[in-house]
Length: 252
Length: 371
Image 1 (cartoon, rainbow over the protein chains, first blue to last red):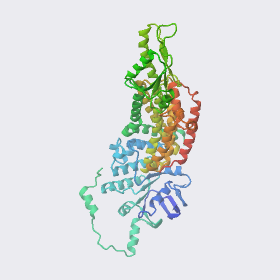
Image 2: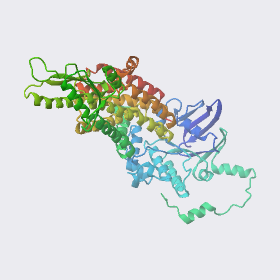
Image 3: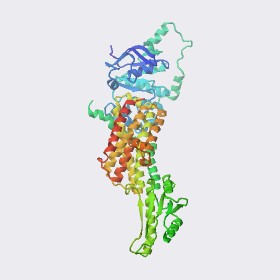
Image 4: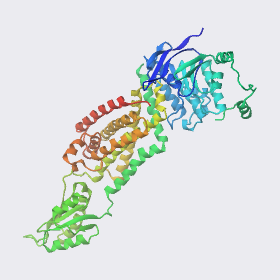
């Protein structure tokens, strides 16, 4: 049995006297990719931000690697890596310098090139972030978030706006991170992404978790309730055609 | 956490931040070039190159032949533009105060008379000028002196019966440019300290850069200190460049100690940057920051004596002026440059600056937000 690393109990967030996160509870196991799915405004990002100590918790509790999130934000921050929805960095700053600064922020000195290599950006070491493509910037952002070897890695809609090649590349990267023993918690709008990538998913709507299981089990239980798609499932879809035509190689 | 670990974010930030400035053409322009342009403009206006003409009033109170002749010479001279309407010193003074006249030349009664016991005419003329027209006044006096010398040598080769005295209440030797330079330096520190952070921080916030820093263990005091140090360095570089240009091209008289000047510049940068940090750190976006920056900067510019001396202001304003953060900075720069003031002499100014620094940084810490 794997260890539980994140425990969330009856978590509540209130904005303008309205509950936007309505007492949700879930556990995340060490070393899994945990997905939080849901339409816009479901409370996914707010939930992540509370766990990241960026928003105060208005009710309930959350612990991460045994540390209470609401009590020691500095210790929590040292344990987590955060990939925001739209990663953005100071301009006119070399990627190596940014990596150096991020590690310095945790009081550490690292070999910047090692981290750039891990996301295939060693050629861009002397580039500025504004010169990177969307996919490259996402990759760089992941490298920057992992400079201090965090235990838990939060990603907020990491593949929004990326082309199919860059998305696949990012999935591989997220799996690699998981394989290094880092627990991944991510939000997404894309069901194909969640199905392929996540070990378990929580489906949120209106500030509540309405389902939580492995993607396979969720599908199975839906089929078990007699669900049938109107159309026969095709052996391939347009995305398969696109990848077949243009290849899997990264374009940026 | 140990000390080294706590200082690492600061040193790393300073190193990167200073490099970043030199990669940004817009920043280079505003930090280094723009103040130099100001310097050139003010420098050429106030140092004068001889091709100027002076608007003067001529009050001839003497009835001697010589004075009539001299009166005519001045009126014919291209350097002088004589205001013909003025017939009394009071009228002249009023016009000088309004800046419509540079100076008044007075040929007192008896000027040019032949004194008892001599066989040549003699006398003393007077040049009266306003406080804000010192250069004009002194230049005019020396032009007249030249004129007199010519006449003198024609009359009596050995003695100089005619002379001119310039009357001014200002500190001896304080030229208009020396005065203006400390103002331009102060203006540079002000724009560096306030306009810099009030544009940069809100932009970093709207882009989410600061928010990203907030997800790390970076602390506000570390981020502040890093910013303060890098701005101190940049301020010192910008002022050093201006100072060198002023000495090389505009004959700035530096009487004081360079170390003292550097101390004031760095201290002033830190103080003014604190204001920018408080505004930029508080503002959520550019729209909030820009009007606030103007609101703080404009009164400081006008009240601190940057572009015109505070003693021209009403007494009530003068008293307020002394306590505005920018005033002690400019005053100390001026006192170091023109009077070789020591840091001990500058005690009152440094005291006001220290008090402001404490207040401003307390506020800045209070109101700072990462997003």
